[in-house]
View 1 (cartoon, rainbow, N blue to C red):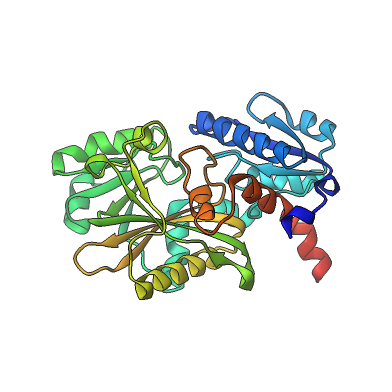
View 2: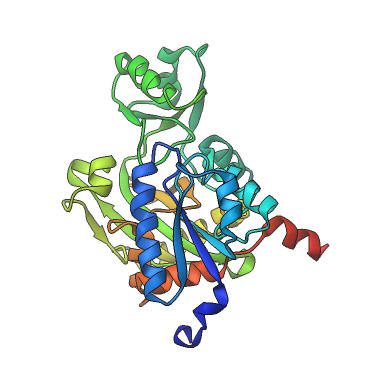
Amino acid sequence: MMSEFDTKSLGKVGVLLGGRSAERDISIMSGNGVVAALKSKGVDAHGFDTGERSIADLAAEKFDRVFIALHGRYGEDGSLQGVLEQLNIPYTGSGVMASAIAMDKIFTKRIWQTHGLSSPNYAVLTPQSELRLVPDELGLPLIIKPPHEGSTIGITKVRGYSDMTEAYKLAAQFDEVVLAEEFIEGRELTVAVLGRGENAYALPITEIVAPDGNYDYQNKYFTDDTKYLCPAPLDAELTAEIQKMAVEAYRAIDCEGWARIDVLLRKSDNKAFLIEINTSPGMTGHSLVPMAARAVGLSYEDLCLEILKTARLKIQSDTRAV
């Protein structure tokens, strides 16, 4: 039972938050929530802002383990995970390789394709690309996004040929290459997955119903107008199919600990398409993983504790297992 677990055995815990990505503000909200939750369970938890403090400071803190509550670059992309491996500090979430792949939506899609998992058709755009030809390939409307950002940052729904240049310029502010993706009209779903390897499992599916179908930065974090249906109102067979697909997507990239997979369910035929995977999902008051956990009786505080308990060194653990 969770109530019997000795939280003191976790030692001094750092909650890594803030950082230097475009999602810094959201990470601070997530991290502060995690710190408060862990403290309420008796954990010796301390917030550590990687955007304001150095790697030397991190080493000097002598944390016994850390909870990664960073979003985006320098926290969710494998770079920090590599530092933690070097510092010999066990950490939550996926390892270096899985974090780096999941952070890159283009490479993620390539791996999913090799596993036969459904994801929207796409094109990779560079400064040399003929932008006006892309709608002929993917159809209209289509989505333009930076492949290394989250929280809907830099994303545009392109409705006409004339919108392509401005949409590309916006996304290119964040990435050297840009992802153009087929637009899937349908229901917006997300699936939280917990665990590792064969023991990974999906939590109940959440459906997102945003004002005018626009689940942007404002509607994601700062409004109460967006509705969340958890469990999503889907029949049992379709629910099981989407959950299975999400777990397969998670395992294909070798994720562990926890993640959130975003899915679109096409209106015309109820076909599910994988959109992206987040290996360090939000933990704010509007976040979706805590919502799914509550649907199975797991409180925010207990969810944080359970994730923290999975912290480990991935590279060294793999080396010892050889």
